[in-house]
Image (cartoon, rainbow, N blue to C red; front, side, top):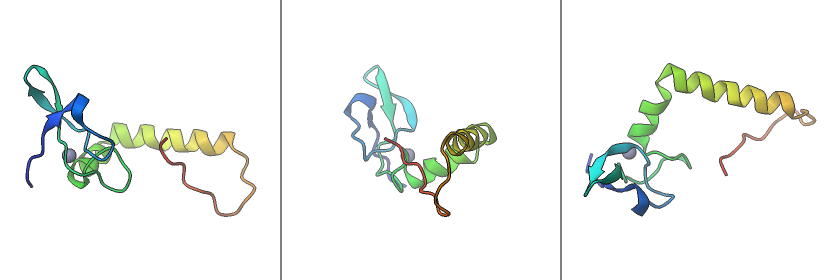
Length: 82
Ligand SMILES: [Zn+2]
């Protein structure tokens, strides 16, 4: 996988936000193209969501969302990140 590291402040919304050391004393991120509207590239997305603590927190957020939102339709729309 090629490295596209950029400074965090220079990364745009289509660049992976996986923290990856520093460039010139500023926080750097992976910078590869993001995967499926997430904040990470495919490789880092897998790493983020393979960590149980993050997945559990994500699932809790989902549950909260659905509990607080009356389900009127049989099929619900998946909440997207703003
Ligand atoms: Zn990445």
